[in-house]
Amino acid sequence: MQPDPRWREIHCGRFENATWDEYNADVELQRLLEEDPYNTVLPGGESLAMLTERVAEAFEALTAHDGPSLVVVTHDGPIRALLSHCLHIPPTRFWNISTEHGGVSCIRVKPEWVSVCTVNDVSHLHAAEVLVTGNAWP
Image 1 (cartoon, rainbow, N blue to C red):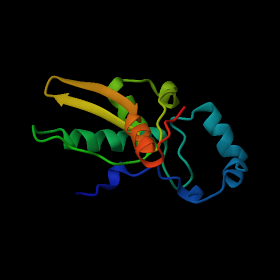
Image 2: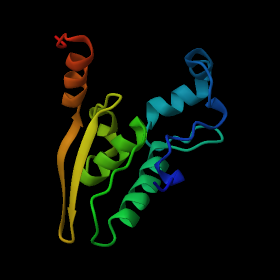
Image 3: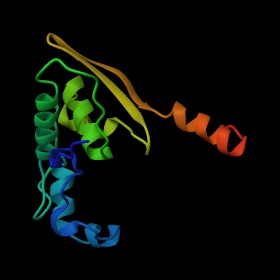
Image 4: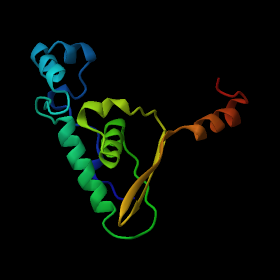
């Protein structure tokens, strides 16, 4: 296992550990986010554009050479950023990808292409629920 800070969640700056009420109380920030949610930098933190750039850099470094399969365990923001990068999703559609805790996305990389095979697969969670409780999810 090799920790890499480039896979961390978005840096919320002065809003790290803040409540939603505290975050929403910053009227100017809310205005800026409404106008340009992708490029607005959180005070003392980063923007979604900055998050995507660092995650793409980490991804390119991991896939620079042919090698074994790799697993990256990270948070919602970096996963959305990576999928957006690989699928060339425009910044205005950043929030169109949905992820759940424990969801698995699979990306295959060859020198000439990148293929997103699965996005947010949670079927293993359903199987685990049946094993633990004997009940299937609805």
